[in-house]
Length: 112
Image (cartoon, rainbow, N blue to C red):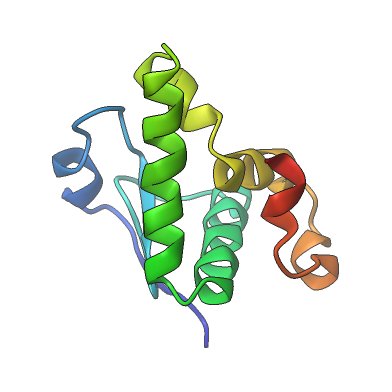
């Protein structure tokens, strides 16, 4: 299933409670404030794959858990966000044009 991409939406702005969000993936949707580059789309598709692997709900549970764990250890909102293994994988691999074809299942675990 290909993701449904929605660009130029206000939804990311409304969800920017703890950090400024320019794009967000809410399976099967990728929603962005502006037009997205191929790199940003790849970043968000990595999240689609992560969500699919974790049956969506477990992705969100773990995502919040990792963020809260970062906050409880004294990190800022942005630091806690960047410390989430899902984000680490997506940010480190979003420039690799071939990554989605070669990505191993549960690759985000390499960042825990």
